[in-house]
Image 1 (spheres, rainbow over the protein chains, first blue to last red):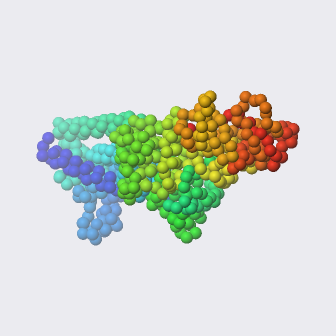
Image 2: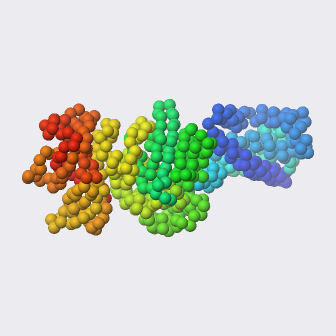
Length: 225
Length: 360
């Protein structure tokens, strides 16, 4: 591996970490709302969150490019806020990845909140816990496996993205050139040996992540008994 | 809290296939049993008291503390109501130890120092379990921890939703004595939901009968159980409860239990003289004669007066209410016997009690 490869690895890990943290912050309230609301909007919001599961990444990237570009309302907003334009920057990649990985974080957390049910929160209320306090002291600890799955999936999925990155981030070394793009470049240049290092690394990484996830689920089942 | 405080509960909740409509005034101390068959609205009523269920237009007050009065826009959310709630099934937080479960409500209950964790753990016999996880406890132990946890919030009202229903007979027997101790040591009112007549007979002071979302009777336990005008659903298993005092041990392995208006003999009891013992006498175990039987193997034959006679849902059978001083008794006899004995209200008779169930 050369410096460009290491740069891509470092950038990818940085991107995935930032995105995972942001998704836990943004995704948790969304998951809580989806798990507990009786609003008719639940279906709509749930579908919007799940869209990236079925959309080709290029579609998502295309619209984000339009919205965040100089003519889009998003772009005009970021310029008005003095942030400049986001496409082809690292923050732009972060924004795109947050959208793209959202369902992988929201759904496990939502499922975990739903599995807790109403009862523990009612119990907490009869023990004088305000809804805010019950959320932190009861719902979050009981949903811990969901948070772990969500974080792992969100991280891994961000590491593995390609289409959205290419559309919104382009291919700028140390700014937006992540591992998957770097592999693409190597293959284009017929540098198969270098491509192997990165591609093989991704394979092992993905396997280890999934292994961790499944053993986590297995343990969760054991504890529930 | 003075003894003349009382609870007022007025709720109306309409569901698709069910309607709860109650307006109750209950004593401010002792155990009130909400008794009824499943689907009668007991649990819904209890949840409304706790604020877990919002009955629009309802009112709930404990003495002069109003927790809900929708007419004046008052509705305290559950976590702002000083109550303890024990759910039917184990409701301990699985991620916390027994001690942390108990502290959960204690520290949020305003840090009241009036009840210490050690005292409550002692009262419920769980002091040795404090460092265990809920998953490693038996059903009975979990329920005792849940009761302790509720008490540690220093509640002014304790609500219990069939706390024994999920337990087998042995576990029930294990918890009942603790509940009786609570009864003796707590000065707060307890609302106890149950569909088990024996639990109610053993624990309750006041009885509310619910049927199909409506209150069919509400009054002191013994008086209410002795009523003959209840719906058939409740007269089927009719019987009274006597609150007796263990007065004497006889030489021939019998004990004499006295109550206002009479005394009965039972097999020798292990309790000390002067102990209060509740016993239940089923209407079907009581028979009547016009004259005192001169020779009978039945021990308990007492003079009484017929107070009322009512039909039952079984054709050919009637329920007779009898008075012995302050105490009332029920007898379930056939219509033919009533005719042949020429039984009428006001008539003196002799009561033969075939069996006495001691509730201890």
